[in-house]
Image 1 (cartoon, rainbow, N blue to C red):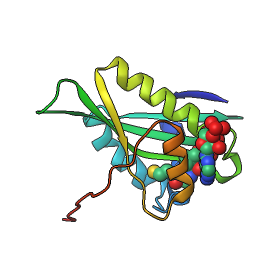
Image 2 (cartoon, rainbow, N blue to C red):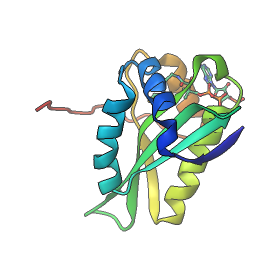
Image 3 (tube, rainbow, N blue to C red):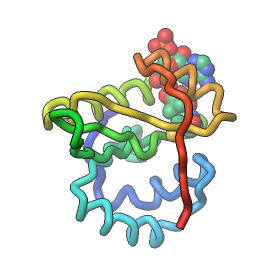
Image 4 (tube, rainbow, N blue to C red):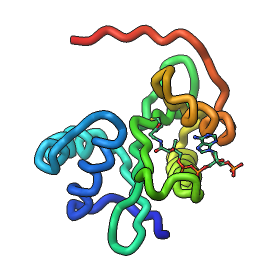
Length: 139
Ligand SMILES: CC(C)(COP(=O)(O)OP(=O)(O)OC[C@H]1O[C@@H](n2cnc3c(N)ncnc32)[C@H](O)[C@@H]1OP(=O)(O)O)[C@@H](O)C(=O)NCCC(=O)NCCS
């Protein structure tokens, strides 16, 4: 398995993975969102197995007013169902954290729905601590 930066030819695989995450998207829809992501300098890393992206992580660096450095927000992380439990998620998140640290991030956060119990265990195992209460307003 190789971890590398996203290429436009990965768009179909990413769209499929977004479906597995519970956010179905076509490759075209994903490409449209890429414009926003690119404009913000967001990172997308993919895990490639046999020329196919079998997982990806996306990351956004947020400047902070109350602290020096950036907060690294993991905006999505998903591994293909067939490839889970083989270290792919660990590799992706670790590589994203390395990237963030090099660019001045002092901490990272990742959110996941209350029902994703397996993901919670994964996050805790990766050294994240649970902080409750998040307030969200949809526009
Ligand atoms: C969460 C997810 C990204 C983990 O990726 P993965 O490739 O399966 O995880 P890894 O194989 O790298 O596992 C790393 C560690 O986490 C643990 N872990 C992973 N999934 C776990 C689960 N469901 N339950 C308990 N532990 C788990 C592994 O046992 C491993 O521990 P170890 O280092 O002690 O051996 C993947 O299961 C996934 O895509 N889930 C669906 C989408 C999702 O929930 N994404 C996160 C929310 S945004």
